[in-house]
Length: 325
Image 1: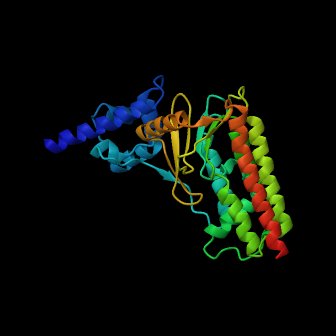
Image 2: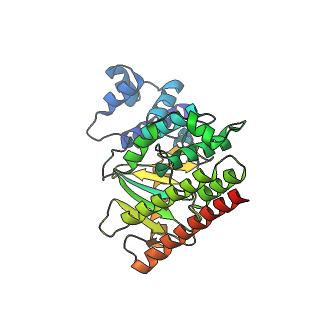
Image 3: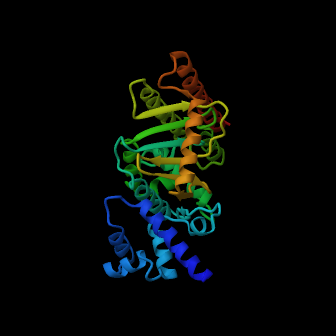
């Protein structure tokens, strides 16, 4: 009797959770029938508790509706996450960009969709097109992620790298939604350090090193131009104390997804409502403790960007000095 009651309780909880996930205007029976590829009558018997979901059907439903069976049945703190594939080659990187695009475009590319970015590094959306800076970032990623490293200069990589438009699709999507980025004084540091490292290693010519610094400065110029009070699509926040982590939260009025980094480019992705709600509330708190550069006074805005430009100029000068030595 206890086992029977547990089965009824668990199946009822699963059905209730699925019902919460679907459009209220849709028939639950039709949704279950479609998800399991069974008949209308078979779905009705399961929903009316006249027959059980098999283990396979339960897992299939959990995957279809992004449900954590641990959390649903054991009331634990576990949540269901997806993860991006590991990157060890240029082809892996291309596939990563394609899958990232598909994950994001579950949310329509319009101003009803918002995205929060905790920018420990320059947001990846700016460094995935076909420009020199983007190709350099791919070179760095593959050097760090490939088991054996690339063992070739940036110039050799540049001549061998095919043009890949998949990153451009991600950038175009990013440009079509409402974005709130949080930066601090260290956001550009890793990119600058990468330029210096490969320059000093003799794997990046001084000419390209200086050109990369100039392209980085051009990127910051474009962001400064976007930081204006009447730009509701792009907001740039400056936080002096927060340690940023490259978390990304994307959502709309109906649902949210949280992207949490676990390696350099690898992300865990969850649609768990509680986790996304906590992340959203955390972002709101941090934004309240940040300075919105769009509406900051001229002095505060110029102080932030001038510090960034001066830092780029120092690294640019170091590339030239290293080359002369």
